[in-house]
Image 1 (cartoon, rainbow, N blue to C red):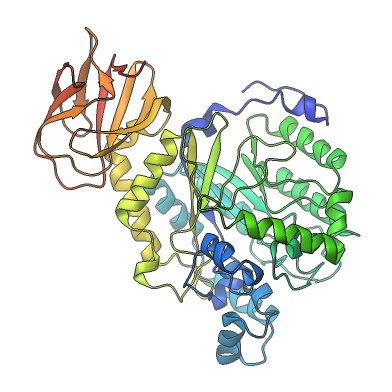
Image 2: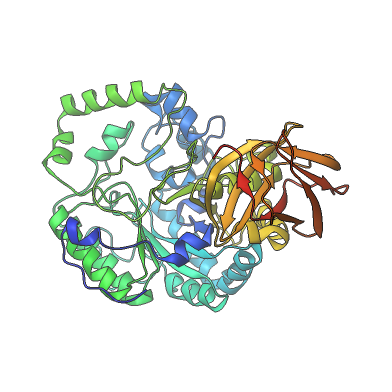
Length: 488
């Protein structure tokens, strides 16, 4: 991508075009790993969207995300508080930091992590450099005025960036700009409480200085913020313009809602009550999910544990963990983890709708290792993409996101040039398979990825292909050349 100067204005920034590498990537790895990973505990009975739908007023008390452990600990009635009393007695959250840093110093192997991600077929990695607890995974030169030494001794950010790039992947940084509990430790029970907890005072300068430090330190290909941004839009857009000047083919996510007087109004109880009433109604809708509001400037959207129902014109990225948490949860049972079929179908469905999957890895805090349940799921993706990656990487949405074959098998479509990929979600029966949404042209041909050429016929019912007996797999792909959409 050629260098282009941007002014710190919304109009100028909107001239930035999504870089091809990001649109081509389709699959990235998210990593949540902090002091909370030592305790590694959260309730597992409901996922985040279920909590917001059925228990909005206490969603953060029963938060399924282990990385919110410190906030959950502020509620004596929470499952986290009960676990902490039983496991650690009167020890503070901060006391767990030494166990975390010791494991990093003695056991962490970033090269091994990067090799797992590459083998899974990931094209980029986004590393949580500082989550809401304010703990930094690099020895920042920007001193925290509220909590001295609240960071790792090893430079995890630099070491992982080097390991990831050595394996041919892009590297991005997540930074919790909206929350930092070393600056604002108020308990957050509802979403209105979250917005009220965005720190001001000396925090905006601290956050900006750390993000600029990360930009200079590892030149991140992705700048991924969370919750909101503590400074005004004018200050934020200057940061964005400088980021694009330094990394022209970088991308910025959508969670940078800049501080304003509207956000400042959340310090008033009546405003919080009104907002919570609105959100309570909103999450009762059956299709509701955690999707950022799309305010201000961004390159792509980031719905959380949520998939859009149709093709989106604007690029998006589904972020989710392998169970109901991003950080490691020792409380998770086998049935809490995403299945092989659901995982691969999810990647396919997201790709067909113009999205990327940012799948989270939550390493343990006590030994700096990725749990076996997560390694297994990375392997599943790598095995399937090793055969069928042609239908995922560098593709674009087709005329249709999906349809069904005559036997009822769900199909998703992707495209590249004159090739349309029909991805069967499951194993269709061998023999003649009719796809009514496709029609042949004089030059239509077909081949099975991982197999060979297929016989294609046209007819009143649509396109018919003859498939061999197929091995059991979450999905099979037929690549069509010069095929047409029957509804066009």
